Length: 327
Length: 146
Image (cartoon, rainbow over all chains, first blue to last red; front, top):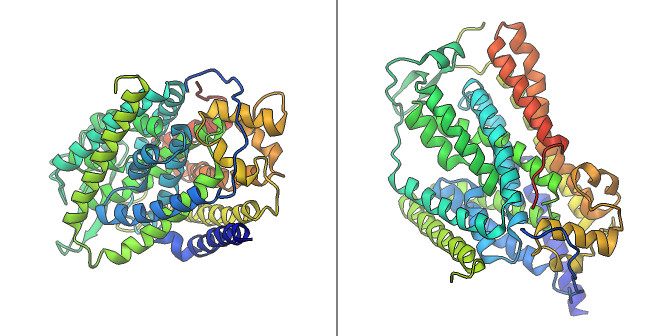
């Protein structure tokens, strides 16, 4: 009787969360061959517990992601793969869908406001989405412990980038390079802090595009959103203004993650009982996070994100090394 | 070719409009399909109380196991074979995910003619090339695996 009540309560909670979160207003805010394993039946009376915990954790993650200025995907994959019973294949597939949904929700508004630049995104997206496919294929072909180990190294690398990367509101671009001139990658936007319209252009386009070969590959391989890498490259290397870089990066994820998501979807790395609670949790948390931005202390949150990522990165490396019998 | 202004270009607005509609349709569909699944209005392949026995397996073993235990198909369901399983609650949820993953392809195809008609051939070609890459990814022709 009690079990039935709890089970129905769990179902009801999911549905209510879906109903609220998926409304338009909220949306804005291995390695062995495929032999058949023996899977014994389990006492699944509490089947809804892990999805419910996932919902709560991703809700908190959504808040922290907004306050810390990072994407949901970069928190999702290391934390969920490190501390939940789900296999890394499904965590990466879900992580891509989490990042994709966030980008789809934000993309239209950013494009309409002309903060995300389609002309800047198009050539970058061609390279990043192609390489994301390659990354996804490689990631699904490599043994899990190698991916886990590489993921740990990558996350620690992201921590290093977060600790060291500077930002430039309007970088100095003396002259556009030939490629960006030919593709007319430029624009005008209003910068309220400077009370003026900024006429922006980019330089070092070939080097920037080459960097997206690596970024796209890593996004597909690890199921991470790639905002942590997109923004520094667009802003510091190519010289796009910070706001244009952040908005274009967010929009770019909707394309890069689409190509990788198809590879994971076609491979079967999607378990709805993981995907839907994760999307709901992240979106709900993002909505609350936006509200909390007014009162939160961003510097403290940023240090917290760096700490969490550092710990998750070490945990991923430990899991990878344990699988190899080193620890 | 058009002048650079503070306003978004026609193609950018068209892209945004299609992306927005696709996103709403995908999210709304996800709510419907997940409700049908979690309340077992549409019975799933894997019973809800047994899902936890499978999600810790590598994907190849997971597919082989659910095929052996429940589906009994000649091959485990990969690629677009989920389309033939839409009558099952869990696989029904692949539909909104495919919508969310597919809307970008439609955006690209929609803006390409406008770019060419304005003489923006380079961006038009980039647009078509990206659409081709995304269609290739969606087709299931390229896929990784253990």
